[in-house]
Image 1 (cartoon, rainbow, N blue to C red):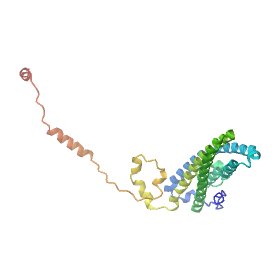
Image 2: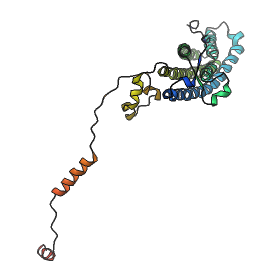
Image 3: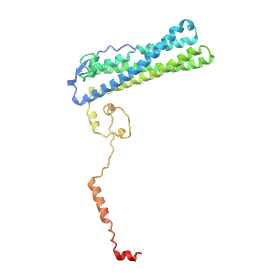
Image 4: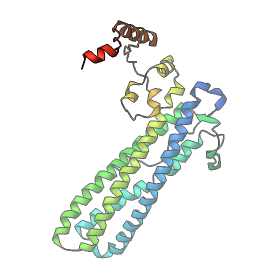
Length: 276
């Protein structure tokens, strides 16, 4: 499985198109894409920092106990755990996200990331990168499941009472690496979905413009969908009849109602006497 999930970068080189060649109606899409990619990059940095810390602990466990426990059955699990964990490190996810963001600028310099975008990549690069992100997502999911399996195995192994301190440490590391792998996969999936929304600028259609004038029914219900869903993929509009009442009609009806009510006769002094 690991052999089929190669972490090597795609060899497809992005062809940059100048911003002026993109219709102004689609500039907002690119703005949203870059905003989402920046958010993904920040989330990724936090998770990778924590992941690097857990990997260092695992490396110390491995080299400290390699000579003593190398022939033990549970040590094979630790070696497998280390192999999968290091595979994630070699993906260089942070570098990949920076490379994607830099394709929207005239040159590959991280100093330009804070400035307005001047270019946008060609469709072939976006598709190739999306395919690479799909492979990374599959690998991270595999790592998450593998850490769960290792956690269950060492939980049973701990019942024997041997090497309890070591096993407890491995359990803790396996749990955190599994959780971080899941968080990293979430970032990768979000980044892929963000790139997927760029298809609207490569395949402009009248349906995408028409949808901007439709009432977002799901938003009225409290939906938390991404802002790109209103642009891509195009969907069949749902026609919902809306009944409106003109203010003048309401005023006329209320006036008629008030006029139809008989006015109450004022009471004089004689009426007050006879009513006693």
